[in-house]
Length: 437
Image 1 (cartoon, rainbow, N blue to C red):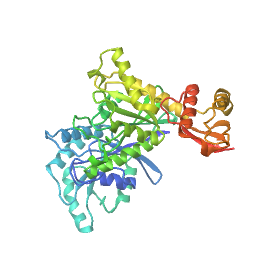
Image 2 (image 1 turned 90 degrees about the vertical axis):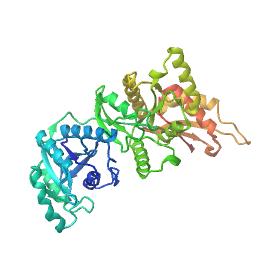
Image 3 (image 1 turned 90 degrees about the horizontal axis):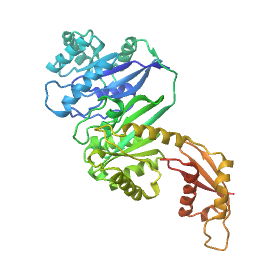
């Protein structure tokens, strides 16, 4: 498979970058809002046009010479986007004309010597389109007039993008990708974890809760395996989601969980496992995803092995029937056990794919189930015939019996416990279906 060229949309805030991003993707992928600074991280998705493929990157709006913590960080993100992109789409506003910020961005683009298309957005009709010629003064070639909102001349823009794409570079043969979602409450260190894993500030990090609003995918390799790391917006209780942007961020977080194989649920060591953390874990379990519990900021708690053992025991007690979830005490700040999270996540991924032959299942568990059948509440006996695995990733088992309706929840948990005792399934929720034979 070839490595796809990267096309980055850059520009000052509120010129329609996320609207253009969504228009080119033909779906509402990025959060769109009229307030400046809504897009904070770089977001990448693949676009296909006339048989050509490229990765499209949406970026935060560029505002120079600002002390605002978000906008200063956005500026750095745009610099990185310019550095990484093969082609730039510099977006300006037809209705507002050229601003000093546009001129400064143009200087950066010219200095980068990267290929660039100057895209004049909000040219909703021919009359407005006549005004685009003033943008020649930016020194970036012919302006391309479009309307991202209505879709006007988007096809022409895509034709130009494809014409200016570099030839795709060959990369190693396609490998299996492990989708790893990082989820948890706001401000527990999810983006810091991503940065610690990648060894660079790929994702915007500040100490203000709610910095990450879109989900951001990053590809990397670890132990010769390819990972897609999904950094997500923090999940809040619904009652606390007062802002429309936070609402859609929560929706995208749930989508990120849906498309993950393994979720790393991060909690704050000082706070411990809260009801909200349990709800986050329950969400991942309900979606049948592998789960790793990462307890961040352990450097502020660590008082030796005894403290670690006691803390872990308390967590397992709070998890109750979810005590199969691996727990790792980490510090994104110091790097403590961050790599171990990846190792365990890889193990959980393999466990989730595992398939046990029916003969082996019944050889190791069959006799136990027949010797300890479900309790009978009437005169009719319950016979357990056999157990088989009917699906992997996620694992689903079928228990065949003469009376499926008589199998209580506690017996299902007993069967699951015996499966785990014999075959593991670390960090993986198991589904047990009871069928009649």
